[in-house]
Image (tube, rainbow, N blue to C red; front, side, top):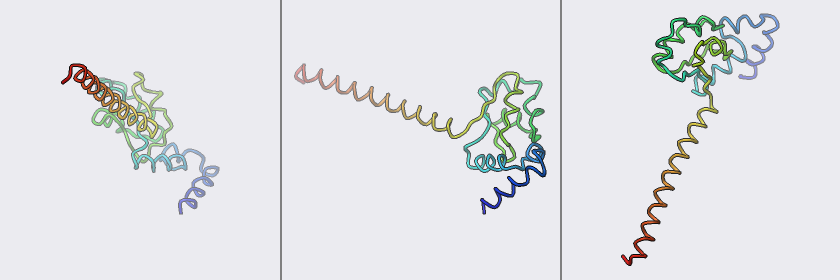
Length: 143
């Protein structure tokens, strides 16, 4: 079924152009990005929510090709924006005058998990090293 839908979207592009993709999020790329956004792998995040609170231009929303105007409110409330209609064109990122928006995908997720794992390993490694030092010290003192 997925193959049939993929080909319908792909074959329709020469006839409809990219206009449906830009205006309605109806294209093969947008559909694929929408599927991943539902799973949680793709969203737009902000580095600092306070920058969005103080933003007066809201250029991210006005530059969106699909017309997703709730983007700034979601950034302020959640720190991220996630929508099935987002096609991932990146115009909102380029339009942000504060360079505050970035793509968040599975690569960022894995990096965050690896950093957390590395922190746990380094802290547990330091603790076991301290315990070994205490054992050595006690053995030298004859305790």
